[in-house]
Amino acid sequence: MATCLRLACIGLATCACLWLVRPEARADDKNKPPGYLPQKLTFQIGSLARREWVEWDGKALRYKVTGLDVDQKQSKTKAVTPSEAQWKKFWASVDGAKAWKWSTRYENEAVQGGTSWGLQMEHGEKKLKSSGRNAYPNDEDVTKGTQEPTPSKAFRQFRKGIEALLGFELGS
Image 1: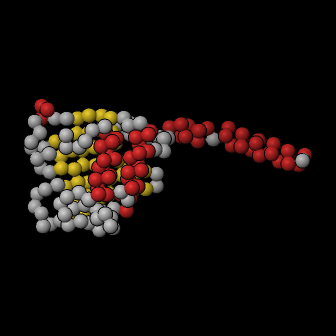
Image 2: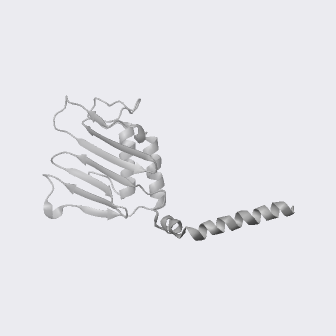
Image 3: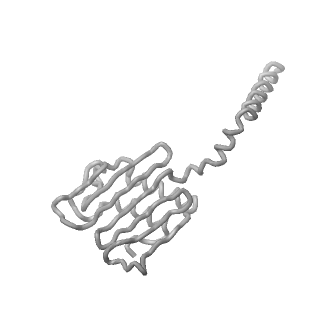
């Protein structure tokens, strides 16, 4: 028992010494953003007539709409700070859409004009860069694209997650 107690004291003293020797480690932990926040999140969708941008700047989610049919005087820009619960729900929608497995590019060359989109995300150890033009991840196998210009269920699930973070629907 005395040996166990002595070993426990030595272990505590070692931890205390390491804590005192490395104050920069404590400072780094305090400056480190919470784990539910992304390191990077950029999403854009639209056409020449109207394009919507959503970007995380480290403090807020920034929304902007631009395009030929957007009156510059009425151009919308907005900053939103989602709660921890909203972020966690968003990451659940990302996982549900299997977004981390999406391919780099989806394209339907049979349709001219239409909708294009782009997405870049980093969260923890995960990274994604994906985009499309009139094509989306296939629901059966998200690594393959649809040949339909209509968004797939997986893409709609991801988009609803973005809209929940913003607090409003894109395109409105």
